[in-house]
Length: 275
Image 1 (cartoon, helix red, strand yellow):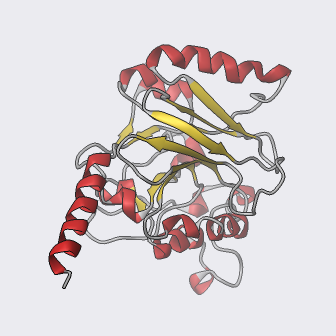
Image 2 (cartoon, rainbow, N blue to C red):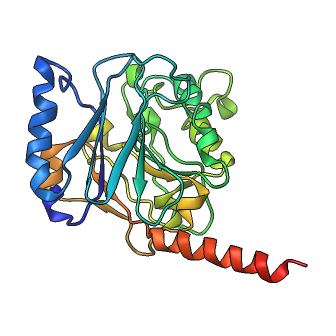
């Protein structure tokens, strides 16, 4: 599946169950399989609440690792675990990368995660996080109607994982819990799917009795969002993908030259405006 999308520089991978076991054999096996495609370096962040670890693979011919923050290291702040910093040609500041696997069972847990990420939307920060956020993005204008799950179609024991908790439901009705991603949007982050006006569902049709939704996102800080390549966002729907995972591969492209050009233009304006 990855080989069908040539030129990937960063692969964000979730649900890396058992990739930390047996001397991390699965991790290095995956790295060996991806190395011929140029993705020759892996990073594993172990989950602190289960077995669904987060991983990423990068192309070191274009990205040089600078730092990787994991929960077990000393001096790691509450909003740092899982982040990888790399240096990219043409980008002065470090590029911050994060593979995301948010809790499926509780919107308050997701909200807590979101509030830890907001500083990565600060001006001048280049950051992208991507993966399974287990939440719909808040509504945005100028797009086709987004699929809204019929939560009543799920069995009772599954209806409350991605819906608002009692007390917050409009008229007592089950409704999608978008609070966490509303926090990210409010901080200035952009969903690549929203920028592309593409609301394709990111899970397979059979998931949740057909009530799966667009819960996988590529989320970019304002600096990187300005460099998204028009027309490059895609949710890959295929039989191969359906067999490989219950989630679909999501890809986008960022042109770092656009950031360099914008910075140069700003510097030029500053010079011409100087007294």
